Length: 610
Ligand code: M6R
Image (cartoon, rainbow, N blue to C red):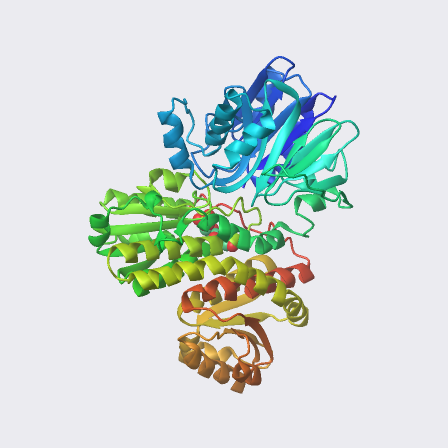
């Protein structure tokens, strides 16, 4: 996820672009850049780090001109660096891009063979070179963009300007957001509405497959094939702050609803549905290395630890490899018996958590191979790892992790399917059906988010005064129960426990009385019958039962006070769905209590102390 902004008109564009980027910084902030046409040529300034670094560069080298583009980056290909920052320039063309180009390695090889000088590690530079090659054949900018995009597979929102066409920007979108802002004798574009609201509230929201030629006085929208399209102009009534959160009250709620998109972006380019394979170049393990794996250690903290717990299940069930689950803060101090032949999977949203970093380093020193799963390209843990398998959830602003949890589940599931298909643990037919199932997950998540929201709001209202809440689950739903309890604790300050449903009878059942809401995860999986018994045990002792169950499960309805339903799906995908109502429950309880949801007390987004 990156932020893009463009301007064409009569004003000096650099301050407008910088202001737009500031309002889009929530989309990414590892580097930023501008390209401005000064009437003669394109001038580009880029800087690593937050926007203020770019501003200080521009104060040294002012940019004059009234046609320009700006970008704030959240790296997906190539670490954060000046050379990888946007805009990317090839010949007389400058491009900014938000998205992921799936076939960029193939295109890059072809461009290099044809003599293109590619200097960055990004997929975006490839787009710039493709457009440049077509422009050199004498095509107008829009025709060159059109020809280039026909070769590109993947997600993009792009804005392109050219040194030779001083009055226009060409924009296009597929699976990444792009809006055009309409001014008086000036026009704007951006990835999101907040960047435009200082200048106009009249916007056109582009749809997938749209491209547009934007001049100061005209916006001409067409399909990629060049057929004219009419799109409505909308009047936006949001305040700039509301707009940054896309109308949601808090970033956490926005991020909860972003999860289907976050999973789609994490899966993008990695599921080869045609051949029934996971593309595993980034995993960096040869077939022999996979066959030699003795044991997998999953190391993480907090929410990432609960994702790791799901990963342990995946690695054992699917890849049939002994797997240890490790709290990063305990791992190093234990002096674990680990070495060659062991694979450590270090999971960290931020990639900077000190406990996880130290654990991964210790494992590496002892000879183990380390693969990291992180959401931040070039962060500390990926940097010390042998390979990195990134999630592409985009920046997570809320302190409570939500979209990165489910993105981590998708990465762990892909990794285990990949290993299982290379060590012979799974037959090709089963691999294919897992891949198909995984591809359906984002849509099922959308259904659950839309279908359960109101019911969960009502539940949160009803139980907002509860002093304690218990979450029960088994198998793949134990980590979800633990995660549900963590979410509630950290943002609403309500005491909550996540527990293995089968362990209740060994002690905690003594806590149950009529005041205790018990949230039981009892979907129709291979644990249902046993979890159902635990639900009845709690019910018999007077607890209020809120069940999360498979749609149409009348038996569970009959024994529960409330049922939140999820669609029927295979075991492996159930945690992606059962966690959603729990995230929503924690959010609404906290919101009703009026806590600081995005920045709860005593917490930090990234914990860099031991
Ligand atoms: O960045 P990481 O994934 O390494 O962070 C680990 C934990 O600090 C983090 O998950 C924390 O528990 C969150 N606040 C949970 O919502």
